[in-house]
Length: 242
Image 1 (cartoon, helix red, strand yellow):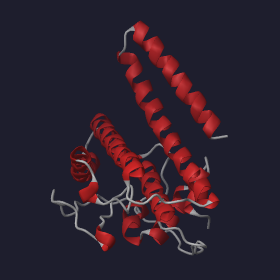
Image 2 (image 1 turned 120 degrees about the vertical axis):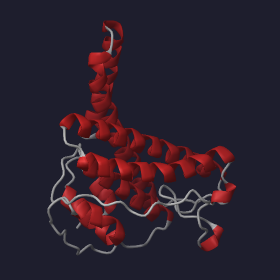
Image 3 (image 1 turned 135 degrees about the vertical axis):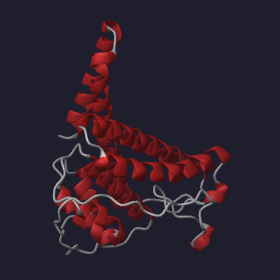
Image 4 (image 1 turned 90 degrees about the vertical axis):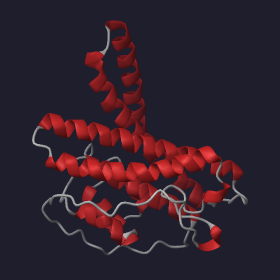
């Protein structure tokens, strides 16, 4: 089984292999994805799997090991079941862990109390987003028409994008303000570039999909500009996937 960085770099990545990698790294997070035997690359499950494994890759960069343990886990294939609601999380300040720091999805070494107020608000907003996404998933599975399901999927996509942007702002601030600057090895730098490339590919896919949906609603002049933008995104995506 390949490493998480190799999987993220692969333009033809397998959903089943990604689930196996996640199961080895975060067993508790894999159950949701094991409910689906295979997912299309543009599906919600596949996007969430990529997001989870990008977080795993970030943590590995923050806590590198000399050798990665070979993954022997197998993926259990089961039918899709109706989603259940997890216990809601509160909006309290995150619990501190070792070294007086908190573990967040994007960067496990960020110290919450050192973040400026606006970024603390974004962190707490992401806790709410997770709850909103869980509720939307439940309602989407219960929807009785394709139109309703599409509406929920659009909401989920928007929430996921907002969450990623919030983590991006936190990560960027922390990179320039953290107490001690971590010096990456050549291997870690390569892994970081792979991760950044993977993140950009997923962002481009979302932008292209959303842009195409907006075309019919635009006036001719704005439509032409949007088509040019979509074409530039598609070219960049094609170049990155080579």
